[in-house]
Amino acid sequence: MGIIFSKDYKNAWVLSLSNAVAGSILPLMHLAGTLAGSTLAPSPSWATAPIALMILGTASSVVLVTRTMQNLGRKMGIYVFLGVGLLVCMLAMTALEFGSFSLFCLASFMLGSFNATLLQGRFAAMESVGIEHRTTAASMFMGSGIIAAFIGPEIALIGKDVFSTAYQGSFLLAAGCILISSLMLTAYTPKLVPQAPDIKSNLPKAQLFKNPTFCLALASGTIAYVVMSFIMTGTPISMHESYGHSLTDTKWVLQSHIAAMFLPSFITPVLVRYMGLRGMMVAGLVCYCLAIAVGYSDNSPQGFWTQLVLLGIGWNFLFIGGTTLLPDTHHENERFKAQSINDFTVFSFQALAALSAGWALNLIGWQPMVLLCLIPVAIMLMALLWERIKTRKMKSIS
Figure 1 (cartoon, one colour):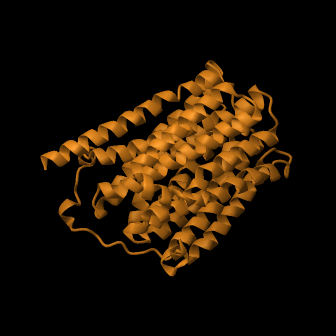
Figure 2 (figure 1 turned 90 degrees about the vertical axis):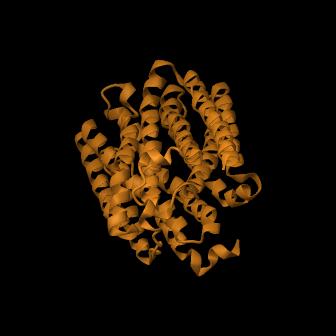
Figure 3 (figure 1 turned 60 degrees about the vertical axis):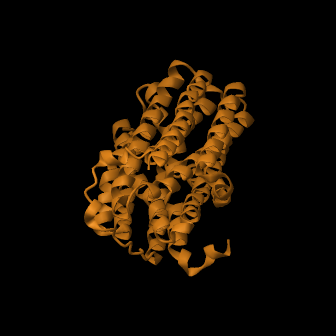
């Protein structure tokens, strides 16, 4: 593991640490945004709308973000959308000041492009190292989310009462984090990625879906986010408002969940070596099933904590598995096309899950809502079996 401290990993470290600081605005939004949204929303069913719109903004801006990076380069593209992040913080403060739910939703939607930019950083980190070290670079980048997991909720509560309007100060502190991240990014020197021959540069997007491994990578990332977002988005309201648990307990559960999403990244390269990417995906599904079982049977703070930690671990295994598998499914000069398709699909479904969480919680309650997550888990299991059958058949024909 000493190799990660070599100069070859400099860019991966810079991107990871910069992401850790700038990314704190996302867990902040999940806590402060959901609770502030429940206060501003015209109906309890719309309390999770800001989070859903943030994710919808991520999905709808993926193509814009990838094309911006393709035209301006990774570094300049990141800077452009860090500026958008600063604008979002100011807009959110204004929305809270005037009690405008629609303006707060607009800020949340715009935050999506900022989120899409941070997520593209994982591909930049993977491009900065050799092929054999891609899993390690991706894990380093994802692991930086542990820092964001604790910074975000902490500054949400620290800034909550700085001004007379609740959570205004939280977004001011978030703007400071974005500025610090921008300074850190000056040490990043993008690595030039050699272009493959132009013979396949006009590959139709539909052609990618004929590759069963591409479909599996896409399914892994999508299912990872659908289940995680559905449960995570409903947790603050369920814990704090439905079951009456304290805001401190709610904050700790969310922090632990986000830490659990990224902490396994430190051992992911080892797991991949022994289990393989598909084996790690199966392990992720097992964690999701355990999370569903705990969430259905135990509504205490400890039960929520256990459920959300298992949920985070399952997400890590599925998402990193899909992310690491994706570059093997296309040519190098098709990477922006494949990455944009992947992220657009993943975050479109995540947005649907986040928006559905508020409605499901209001209509059927927490326990039936948790059981619904068995459906996407079953779909992912079928995707694994289908990909295995298809690849074996393709190998036998060739």
